[in-house]
Image 1 (cartoon, helix red, strand yellow):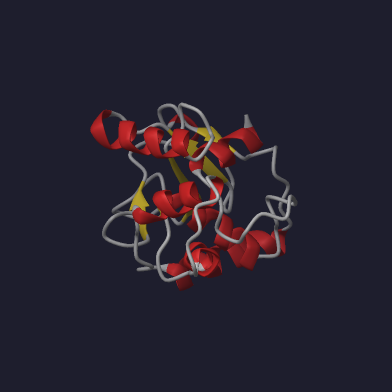
Image 2 (tube, rainbow, N blue to C red):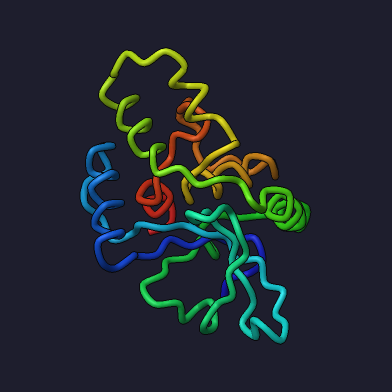
Length: 172
């Protein structure tokens, strides 16, 4: 069972999922099964008996009620048991999820990530990708983990240079 602070990668069906997969392919990740990433924050209540996840969405980063137990989320692969977190990091992840609520979503980040991969000369590209004013779901997960002093990547990548497929590769 996922614990507070664990993240998952899940498939998205339909046109949106196909567009994300295309963006990941252009970015060099190939066509994978995972198009979205989010953090399990728990906090079950009357509106969410199975608790909440936190992630980036077109309306901004938000808490979303789980429709089933986290370990039964269709198609999900969880970081549970694969990415070790301390109790302090788990508490910090919750804190940074709350602080990140409302961060804007930007599908343009997929194009920025691809531009970097393709070495497209674009002034300010590194700053744009690293900006915390707009993020795709995988950037939100990576950002929250970095703020919590848990670094998912140690390959000298630019801050924010991460797709859902790359997160999934860490835990599959």
